[in-house]
Image (cartoon, rainbow, N blue to C red):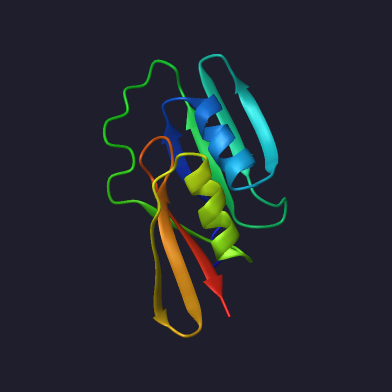
Length: 119
């Protein structure tokens, strides 16, 4: 079994796209829908993706409650500096052992994103 995607319901598609494509540098691999229901798939075409779903009339309460997504980066310090300079609140970094370091940041809807660097 292989994980294909994780679905996130978002309140403001443009804010979410900015966060995931400009800040975290994920690619848009597909985008479809109409004015009532839009879906954007983020990530490499042949890899695991994050699926953003936007429905303008949907009521989304506490969307990020209890959800955490882990993404791996090659340069943790650079990403921490970039996020802080953009005004995002960063929690960490934490290094539970010599081979891994990570920190947390929240996306515009409150989903927790864990950014990981492995050595």
